Image 1 (spheres, rainbow over the protein chains, first blue to last red):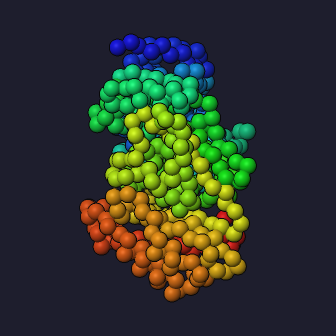
Image 2 (spheres, rainbow over the protein chains, first blue to last red):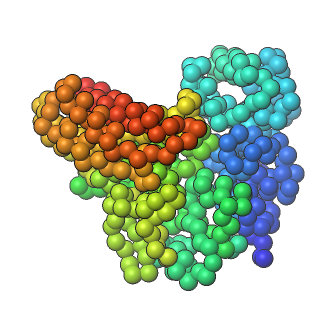
Image 3 (tube, one colour):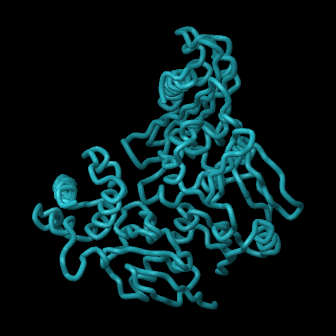
Length: 159
Length: 288
């Protein structure tokens, strides 16, 4: 079976990889680009642990083929901190202890950032619906929501 | 598995027509890739239609209708400034499917081709009288959305045929539509019952109506008796009662842990009443 050559942009950097047709973008990020921040939870688009953005749109990278990323712009958790400085969402997650095992955390951070870019002042209900596709089995969600709302408030003040 | 990126629907159709094994078309991938990853369906040829010009466009037609590209994602429909003003029921049906992540990829045509009787995107399309353009080895033809599903997981599409566009008619004056579904939780679940209503009024009187039920029969079902219960009325209590009765009579649901036959049948009547009230208010311009 012939491999597919893909050139794409990940967190602003041009990258290339060779993938099998059935490999997902998640496989390619983790196995070919060593970007292991996005996690495989379910592999069927239910849990959101593999969330990334593709051309600015939040997607499950387990439901995108590696080959489909050709010419796209991908953003992952690895691109969230800038020059070693944590993103406000990341800081607030630590402050509020909004994680325990941490498997869902990269996906939730990417998803929350994607909402705040669209809507810097979401209600708690809007936030909860937006994050409904990011499952967490540890926290009971409450600390996550508090951390995100707090980060949103801080980001609004800073802007 | 061979991955294809044809530049046209004619080419996509040709690849599918000459394929010897299992073929799947890839748009949003939220069903196809799940089936692939869980080894339910492993296509020999996977034909990605997203490189075909126009597949990401939502375009208003000269007659006021809409042409929606086959790779337009649910989120793109929801964000469109005008589509939801014309057809709120179609947009809210699609918007009910899956999470934010799924909405970034899932398509209405994919929801149709997956052939689920519980597809949330489809009832409002049938209620609107929408059609799809099918490109096949013998050229293109238009088929009513209502005629595409033939049973759970099955469609009338022949080998080599691919849906190349979705066509929604002009809204016209004094019309309104709505879609409601029942699920046991508040978000991200499969419809236990779905109901779409599309109607037109003249003053307070309903002049045209279509009522479509989902998840209560092997295919999505347009119910003429429900429409008849509404036409000529002002949606008074007697009309709602007749609608409820006709909706319940049209149900042939499955019985499972998510909903018994009695429950699904009862809920079909309730949703028909509620969806009719919303569509009526929208038709009269009292609700967006």
